Image (cartoon, rainbow, N blue to C red):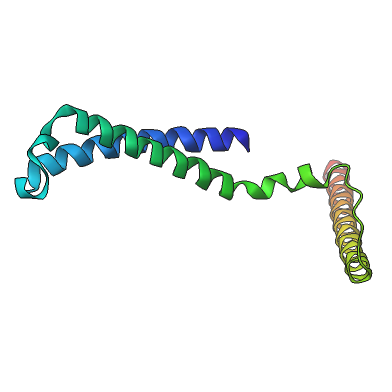
Length: 134
């Protein structure tokens, strides 16, 4: 989670810096001079655009990465917790446990079926080898 936030922040920073510089350069080159004051063509405004959009891009990149990866943090909050459940929550929690148990049992049945099929196939292959040799 932390790595994703840092990577998102730095990629947003890079994108924001590039966007800010290009925005200043393109606005100087293609927009009419009546849109901006004459001192806008000075380098300090390019610095302002670049760093301003870099900060915005970094914030947006880190925020987006955090929101996209928040589902990986639930185990942090559940570890060591002793929740006080209401009666309704206890009933629904039992339902969730039953569903989980059923899913685990189904997975075990599937694994047993796969193992049985594998053993049957191995036996058939062994029988076929014995026939071809004898």
